[in-house]
Length: 455
Image 1 (cartoon, rainbow, N blue to C red):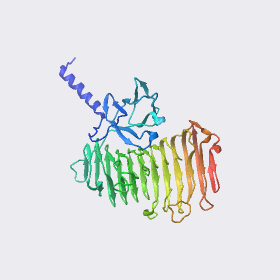
Image 2 (cartoon, rainbow, N blue to C red):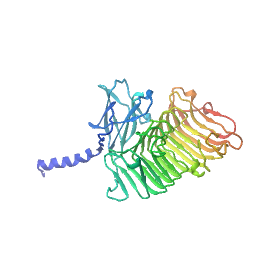
Image 3 (cartoon, rainbow, N blue to C red):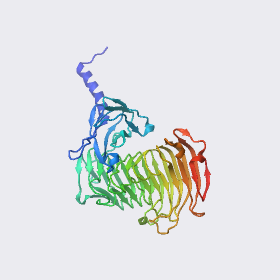
Image 4 (cartoon, rainbow, N blue to C red):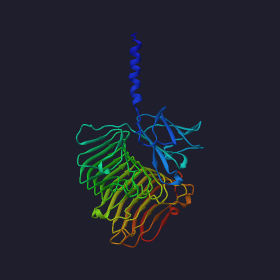
């Protein structure tokens, strides 16, 4: 039998161990950033910086915390809260992560990259953990078309970073850009990385641009992996854009009113997937704005999302909008962990047809809440024609609602008149507390000018 020197064996062991250690990547927090005093976090025994976000709500603790890191294997999580607690809930609940409480610490294991909310105090003083997949295809910082932001705090003249066609903005782990990012009349734009675009230094509606991250009349946009923190107004907005992909973006908002998360406006071919959104205002709103010249909003896919909305809607369709049409929109395989008002509001006006909508595979934590969706053409103060729209071909499928008051759960359907009606609405496999609803009629409030409802 062949033998090897001890030094050779040690080198082989180290060569095996190094990649395993590299499977956990932890960013450094810049010294100028405020770390959380509410939590200490350890992943596989290693300390992880915990950041702070504002929510400006006394009943939610005024601030909350978040942390991010990359993993490519299961990891053990240990959290040490600063204040006493008796239990901890980890949402989304359907991830079925059940922590152990030991020596005033919270311990659990994640089996893969996850975006979760750790809640030892209910909705107050929460801790978000963003366990990301390892980065790939990091751009070359020497490429003249790449703006490469290294770890640290970054400012730009005028507080607005403007991108042009064929540019990439890369935010490295630990990078914080304190500016709005704006793109207009451009194509082939990439914004990616693990860093943060931070708007929390500006008061409500007084930022350096209309939105924190805005695109106008652009094509081929790819946004991936970044964190958007504390916007002063709407957060991420493509207007009159085409071919937009938004992946793995984390929005830690809820600091001010009008902080909508992602609002595709008069845009087409938009895909939003695997994002985490916490806002005060609507998590997402699909709109047609006056400046959109009535161009349609169409072919939009929203999937594998996690939503928290403290005051408004989860997804708003066509409200306050003007567009030729809003159509072919699919929301799938997503989780609503906290909400206050009706999660899905479909309210077209201005003669707009809102058609071919699929909402499926949604898990809703609806404790004490009633209305799940409202389908109702309306007129409101933002309209010019002052006429309702109409709704046609909407499917709700595989909806699982958690409620401590099941009899109050309902879907509202109401047309405006014979021309502005609601028709061809389908419900399939609606569950409350994990049990399929057999008598759906008890959970439908159907008013006038509604037809072809399939149960």
